[in-house]
Length: 220
Image 1 (tube, rainbow, N blue to C red):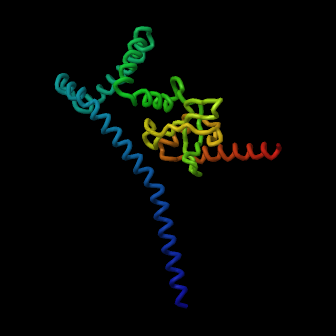
Image 2: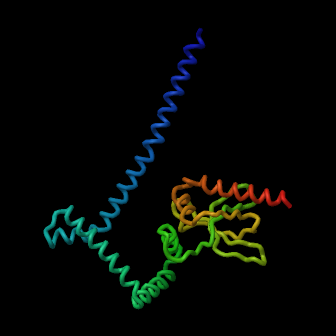
């Protein structure tokens, strides 16, 4: 008879714990999204603050109106810049500036190419997505093929860091330690930026490749 109240209390405690965790699982992404949007808004406001202050002082605009005009001006500048770089002279100026920035800021080129991957535009420095086995263990890391050496059987793979894909590891792996995945670079890059969110797609693809390889080996 004494065990029944204890069992009821355990079930009640388990119900409360599961319910609270369920609430956290629902509310936490919403809260993080709100914090991210607030951070982006404050960052954007801070970036256009000099323009906003100038408009308030010279045109006597209210702060909200000045911010709106500032955003429109920034968008217009981006549009005009895009038009200019489409011309031969603009393209030459852009290449000269990028060459200079690449010399004084080594991470500029990688950052630019990573951004292009996220936007789905520009040339692709990565020829494929892989799950690489590194350091001789069973740990798999998401990476991108940057070069291959057929005679030596080596593959150069760049493994970006989570949240900040402009940094990471550069490894020269044996072909047998590289699992090539039939997914887009954009899909893999999203899983890296989201700290692994959606990586099940990568693992399912790899499992399919492994099963197919196993069937082919068995057939031999």
